[in-house]
Image 1 (cartoon, rainbow, N blue to C red):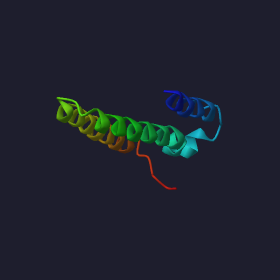
Image 2 (cartoon, helix red, strand yellow):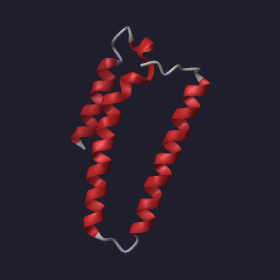
Image 3 (cartoon, rainbow, N blue to C red):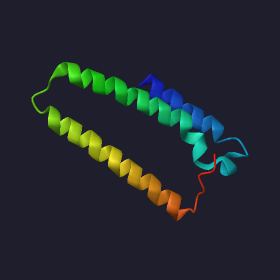
Image 4 (cartoon, rainbow, N blue to C red):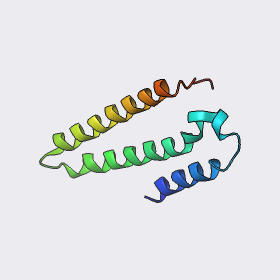
Length: 85
């Protein structure tokens, strides 16, 4: 949880920069990596628990990932954002 808060805090701090508009989606990189690390940790914990309905949990995680990806693509297209790194 602390890692997610740190990732979110860096995004808020970067938001005060006047160049945030030019940076576009690159300002989310720290938050994305924090979320990836937390997901890997939670996946490891789930594998150790061996839940009765483990497939439901994995299906929900996959659905969330697909929806998140689709929303990101939608906003990229909506705001005509170029992904130049």
